[in-house]
Figure 1 (cartoon, one colour):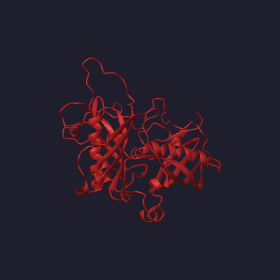
Figure 2 (cartoon, helix red, strand yellow):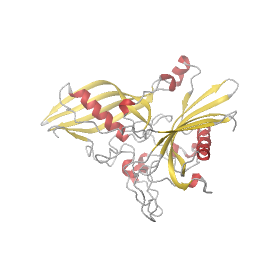
Figure 3 (tube, one colour):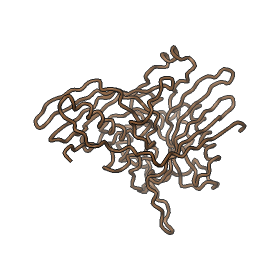
Figure 4 (cartoon, one colour):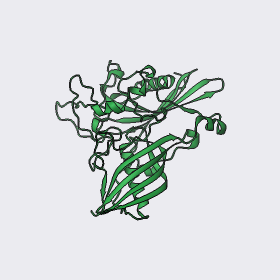
Length: 367
């Protein structure tokens, strides 16, 4: 395609992985609010394994209920979405908040803590995630700014499909990549050139060697901790087709070499590459692990789909509606909370059904 270019950017290996917060005293007094809010932000971003990381904007309110042995805290937090995707190892505190013209997203969260004997335990949170300004408000402020459209937009997904295909034609990677998740789709009209689509999406490395004759869409992804991931942005015109693709690469967390004759393990994939126990709102993984890659490689039982029963109860079919799904790869997921904006990846409530409140995250303060 004349004028087409693809840019592949290798994410710096020296980026710090977002770590658990250093021990900080969360008290039952007024001064304990900021420390509790910072701890909550770490836990929320650990659990939020779809879409983008969030940063704290402000503490709206801080309530304390005294009880024997300690207290219960309730915080009202205002959060803003950043431009860092959840696979980006950059700490969320260092991530840039999305500008208003880029269709900023906010979340109002109610967070509850239980503090007993110097043990600060996050027991529950619920968030309302929405665009900072509606389409109507943005039209008044910036008529030419592209608008967010639902993640199941047929034309938007068509542009993503072409971008993934072009990505696999123009890279020198060892394996093909497939779509893992669409982050956002914006659309705007360009005078004389029709509709333009600006997409952001995540790719994951598969078992299929580059150059093999297999259709990449039929390839199975590598285990989450052994796969390279890529976060890409593309632009597409209805009049001229795909214009550009630019991607950041993120290396696997498990770089252990395979032994002689040893093959890559097969994993049970769920929710776009995450195993069942690291699903949306399930609480963080064990201490010291990466919440996006803590995934023992387990074979999927014959005839099984890798989805535990409680997940089927909380997530509808991909994109929420079969008739609007643009199925160019069955691995591509769309997770959303009920009633959420279909153009966003919301912060879903925690704990999820079937998970014991307080199972973790807790924060022992006397270590």
